[in-house]
Picture 1 (spheres, rainbow, N blue to C red):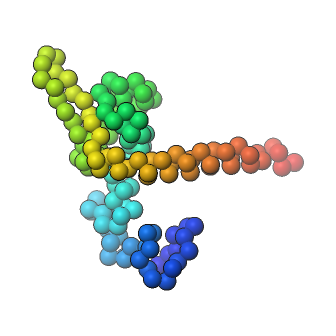
Picture 2: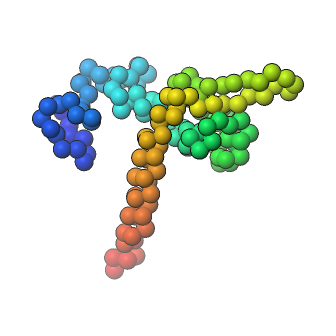
Picture 3: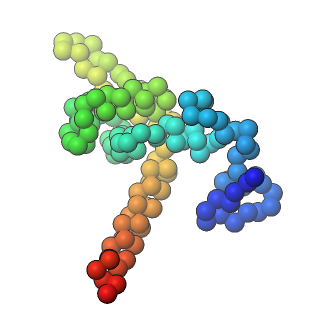
Length: 143
Protein backbone atom coordinates (compact mmCIF):
# COMPACT_ATOMS: atom_id res chain seq x y z
CA UNK A 1 0.00 0.00 0.00
CA UNK A 2 1.42 3.40 -0.91
CA UNK A 3 0.46 6.87 0.20
CA UNK A 4 0.57 10.30 -1.36
CA UNK A 5 2.78 12.84 0.34
CA UNK A 6 0.71 15.82 1.44
CA UNK A 7 1.01 18.66 -1.05
CA UNK A 8 2.78 16.47 -3.58
CA UNK A 9 1.27 15.60 -6.90
CA UNK A 10 2.43 12.18 -8.12
CA UNK A 11 4.32 12.30 -11.39
CA UNK A 12 3.68 8.68 -12.19
CA UNK A 13 7.38 7.90 -12.46
CA UNK A 14 7.77 7.16 -8.74
CA UNK A 15 11.21 8.74 -8.46
CA UNK A 16 10.44 12.39 -7.72
CA UNK A 17 12.11 14.24 -4.86
CA UNK A 18 9.51 12.97 -2.38
CA UNK A 19 9.04 9.48 -3.82
CA UNK A 20 7.61 6.99 -1.39
CA UNK A 21 10.05 4.72 0.32
CA UNK A 22 9.50 1.08 -0.44
CA UNK A 23 8.05 -0.86 2.46
CA UNK A 24 11.42 -2.60 2.83
CA UNK A 25 13.02 0.77 3.70
CA UNK A 26 10.67 1.30 6.64
CA UNK A 27 12.18 -0.39 9.67
CA UNK A 28 10.98 -0.78 13.24
CA UNK A 29 12.12 1.70 15.92
CA UNK A 30 15.63 0.96 17.17
CA UNK A 31 16.81 -0.23 13.76
CA UNK A 32 19.00 1.85 11.47
CA UNK A 33 16.66 3.90 9.24
CA UNK A 34 16.97 3.66 5.44
CA UNK A 35 14.20 6.00 4.25
CA UNK A 36 15.66 9.51 3.73
CA UNK A 37 12.89 11.18 5.74
CA UNK A 38 13.35 8.67 8.56
CA UNK A 39 17.13 9.25 8.51
CA UNK A 40 16.56 13.01 8.88
CA UNK A 41 14.04 12.48 11.68
CA UNK A 42 16.45 10.16 13.50
CA UNK A 43 19.17 12.82 13.28
CA UNK A 44 16.89 15.65 14.45
CA UNK A 45 14.85 13.45 16.79
CA UNK A 46 14.09 14.44 20.33
CA UNK A 47 12.68 17.54 21.89
CA UNK A 48 15.05 20.51 21.52
CA UNK A 49 17.34 18.93 18.90
CA UNK A 50 16.21 21.18 16.01
CA UNK A 51 16.63 24.23 18.25
CA UNK A 52 20.18 23.20 19.17
CA UNK A 53 20.91 22.79 15.44
CA UNK A 54 19.34 26.22 14.83
CA UNK A 55 21.79 27.75 17.33
CA UNK A 56 24.73 26.13 15.54
CA UNK A 57 23.45 27.41 12.19
CA UNK A 58 23.32 30.92 13.66
CA UNK A 59 26.77 30.71 15.27
CA UNK A 60 28.78 28.06 13.38
CA UNK A 61 30.35 27.00 16.66
CA UNK A 62 29.57 27.37 20.34
CA UNK A 63 30.65 26.36 23.79
CA UNK A 64 28.38 24.43 26.10
CA UNK A 65 27.77 27.55 28.21
CA UNK A 66 26.87 29.63 25.12
CA UNK A 67 24.30 27.03 24.07
CA UNK A 68 22.96 26.81 27.60
CA UNK A 69 22.53 30.60 27.73
CA UNK A 70 20.85 30.66 24.29
CA UNK A 71 18.38 27.92 25.32
CA UNK A 72 17.70 28.64 29.02
CA UNK A 73 14.66 26.34 29.27
CA UNK A 74 16.83 23.39 28.23
CA UNK A 75 18.17 21.32 31.15
CA UNK A 76 21.87 20.50 31.36
CA UNK A 77 21.14 16.78 30.99
CA UNK A 78 19.09 17.25 27.82
CA UNK A 79 21.68 19.64 26.31
CA UNK A 80 24.45 17.11 27.03
CA UNK A 81 22.35 14.34 25.48
CA UNK A 82 21.58 16.42 22.38
CA UNK A 83 25.24 17.36 21.89
CA UNK A 84 26.23 13.70 22.16
CA UNK A 85 23.47 12.76 19.69
CA UNK A 86 24.50 15.44 17.18
CA UNK A 87 28.19 14.58 17.57
CA UNK A 88 27.43 10.90 16.98
CA UNK A 89 25.41 11.79 13.88
CA UNK A 90 28.28 13.86 12.46
CA UNK A 91 26.32 17.12 12.63
CA UNK A 92 28.71 18.77 15.10
CA UNK A 93 32.28 18.06 16.07
CA UNK A 94 33.62 18.35 19.61
CA UNK A 95 36.95 20.22 19.72
CA UNK A 96 38.99 20.36 22.89
CA UNK A 97 41.52 23.16 23.25
CA UNK A 98 44.58 22.29 25.32
CA UNK A 99 45.34 24.35 28.39
CA UNK A 100 44.01 24.83 31.87
CA UNK A 101 41.16 24.74 32.29
CA UNK A 102 40.51 22.70 29.16
CA UNK A 103 38.04 24.35 26.82
CA UNK A 104 35.59 22.57 24.56
CA UNK A 105 33.86 24.08 21.54
CA UNK A 106 31.32 22.38 19.36
CA UNK A 107 31.68 23.16 15.66
CA UNK A 108 29.09 22.61 12.94
CA UNK A 109 30.31 20.14 10.32
CA UNK A 110 29.56 20.18 6.58
CA UNK A 111 26.74 17.68 7.25
CA UNK A 112 25.40 20.05 9.89
CA UNK A 113 25.52 23.03 7.52
CA UNK A 114 23.60 20.92 4.98
CA UNK A 115 20.69 20.92 7.47
CA UNK A 116 20.18 24.66 6.96
CA UNK A 117 17.42 24.30 4.31
CA UNK A 118 15.65 21.76 6.55
CA UNK A 119 15.69 24.07 9.57
CA UNK A 120 14.82 27.09 7.38
CA UNK A 121 11.82 25.14 6.01
CA UNK A 122 10.75 24.33 9.57
CA UNK A 123 11.06 28.04 10.44
CA UNK A 124 9.01 29.14 7.45
CA UNK A 125 6.32 26.51 7.99
CA UNK A 126 6.12 27.36 11.70
CA UNK A 127 5.87 31.08 10.96
CA UNK A 128 3.03 30.51 8.49
CA UNK A 129 1.29 28.17 10.96
CA UNK A 130 1.61 30.66 13.80
CA UNK A 131 0.12 33.41 11.62
CA UNK A 132 -2.73 31.15 10.44
CA UNK A 133 -3.57 30.23 14.04
CA UNK A 134 -3.52 33.90 15.04
CA UNK A 135 -6.05 34.69 12.26
CA UNK A 136 -8.28 31.70 13.01
CA UNK A 137 -11.38 32.44 15.06
CA UNK A 138 -11.18 31.15 18.60
CA UNK A 139 -13.89 29.10 20.36
CA UNK A 140 -15.45 32.26 21.85
CA UNK A 141 -15.55 33.94 18.39
CA UNK A 142 -18.00 31.40 16.94
CA UNK A 143 -21.03 32.58 18.96
